[in-house]
Every structure is written in C-alpha cells, then in structure tokens.
Image 1: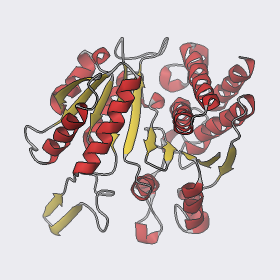
Image 2: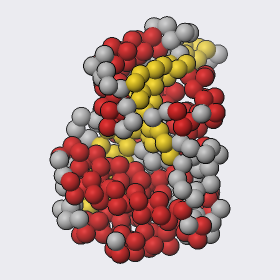
Image 3: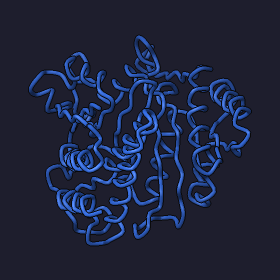
Image 4: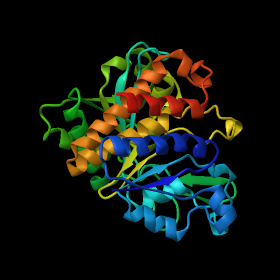
Length: 354
C-alpha cells in the first residue's frame, strides 16, 4: 500500500519524522508492504513552488491508500490567489472526508485533569458553519456591507445520515453507547435535521444504547462525568470545540490524535496546530501524530481485511502508551525532559524488542 507523508509546517517535520520512522520499522516487522513517499506541502512548498500544495502532490494523495499529514501554519499563508491554499480544508473538501474521528483517553501515568476518560468524538467534517468547506462555489461566510457579517450553517439529510452511521458502527465495535450532541432547542432546522437523522439511524442499531445531550450541557458533563461517554457524534463546530476540550482534560493537545475519513480516502492528522514557537527546538510531543498514524493503520486493516495492519496499529499505540507512562520519556508539555527525537528513538527500540 502507498502512504504519502506530508510533514507540513512548524513542528510538523519533527513530529512527522517520528511517525514516518515508526512506519518504516513496522513495515518490516509486520510485513505490511508499505511504500512511503515524502513530499513537501505548506510554507516550504510555497517557497519552492509558489503554492502550498501542488497539483502533482494532490494527485499523489489521490492515488495513495493513506496520508500522514502534519500541521499547517495557515495564519501565515497568503491569500489563495497568491498560492496560500489551506491544505487541511482542501483535502477535506476535495476528498469528501466527511468523518473526523477524535479519541480522548486518560492513559496510565499521564497527568490529566480527570480520573477516567475513554471516548471518541465523531465530528461531521464537511458541512456545518465552517465556511471554507460547506459550499461548492464561494464560501458560507460573507459581508454584504462593511458593517454586516453573515455565516451560513449547512446541514443535509445525507450528510447527517452518513456521519450517524459511521458513529453507530464505531459504537457497536466499542462499548455500545452513542451520544448525539446538538442544539436543536434553538437551531430547530439546522441542528434539528441532524438530530432527526441520528434518531432515524439509531433504529437500525438497537444493540447500541442511544441518548442525546444539548451542547451546553455536554461541555459541562465532559468535565464532571467523562467516564459515562463512549462514542459522541455531533456537527462540525461543536465537534471541533468539544474534542479539544476532551483532549485537554485527558492530558493536552499533544496527545490529540485524529483521522479524517471518506469513502475512498483516509488522512492521519493530529488535532493540534503547528506550534511555531517551539518549532526546531526538538521539544514537541510527537504522540498525537503517532496515535493518528496508528489509527490510519487500523482503518486500512479494517477496510482491506488485513490482520497484520491491525496488529501493527496495536503495537504502535501500546508502545507509545508505555513511553508516556514513564516520566523519563515524556516531553516538556507533560512535565518531562525528553526530546522529540529521543522519544522517536525509544519508540523504535520498543517496537523492535517486542
């Protein structure tokens, strides 16, 4: 299988290099048959090619079985007409990556703000109020006059249905509980359509316990009783906010894994940003992109029925857990002194030993 490696901006090249090296070792150990191809995107591509993602790289991504994508410093990009294409939103829109799957888990030995949490937030990824991806032409945000700004939230029956199916299927493989988070008490049409479709899909998953929570309450319940939740499904903006909250409660965004999935494509991408303030200092936590890479392997293993991919994914996650449990191999964001590269070296050693 072909995996495209795109380091991105800021700390991206440092942390993605750890994930790439891990894939190389796993490839040999588990006979995965991977072909890894590393290409530039983001500011480095803008400097050399005049655009943050070239047509050639886009074609490579389209033909790849999976992509490992680093963070993007989108605030430093020029306008799209000047080559500053938002890479993440471009992939989500053009590859129809409708499901953003973000797990949050309290791990043994890792400092966290709650005692127990093991949940996955399934975020609808192509609609909602996100103006960069919810329209075919133009954007969902505009200003008719200099003193008036408007934003359009998009919800389609099919978009709501397919994210609900994805979430219920995931819940069925886990602890068989799904929570729909909404704001249908106020956004009666937009959020109401989402809730209506989730409720309709729930009838095909009678073995999964289903409940619904208003987003305001959910923000509080994540702090108060996070252990009660298994799989949470919600719309784009709510999912973005709640998943960051959950990640911070579980130890921080340095652990925030994520995978973007569509019918034909899957992209591993950590939920955190490019952290330009620590770029090049060899101090960034690579765990999030490593866990994201494990999620990609698991997705490919399930999709193509490859047991060795599932075993490789489990090995990568478990070895990363072991490193995070020991203070000597924690990065500064978790109170340790381990460097990014040393974490990667220790991870490879663990994979090779067991």
